[in-house]
Length: 125
Image (spheres, rainbow, N blue to C red):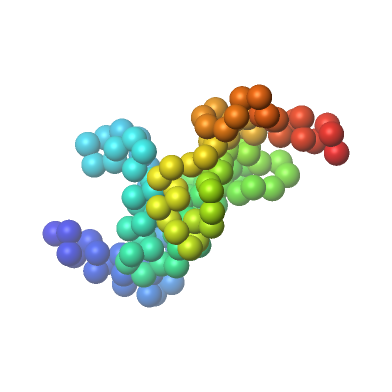
């Protein structure tokens, strides 16, 4: 069964099918924190690393009608991971983000003494 899933996925990638990332909703087959593994699965099975990251962010948000999420641009929610390096060259960086931002505010990682919110940055500009 797993091999058939892999083959279907690879054929979809080759055919140019729009692929959106899944969930880490905490169900038996979708454990919390599993998104980085899904990105690696996609990249290991035909997608470029950038296409896999895009599938999990922009494409996933767009697919479910969440235009204010999935990209980093003015007017979006500013939910993102900050990693120490280029994840398109090393997807394992997604396993250990340096900082996690939700709504532009650091919620994990980083130095609390130097935290700035998106609103702080905008006000300074």
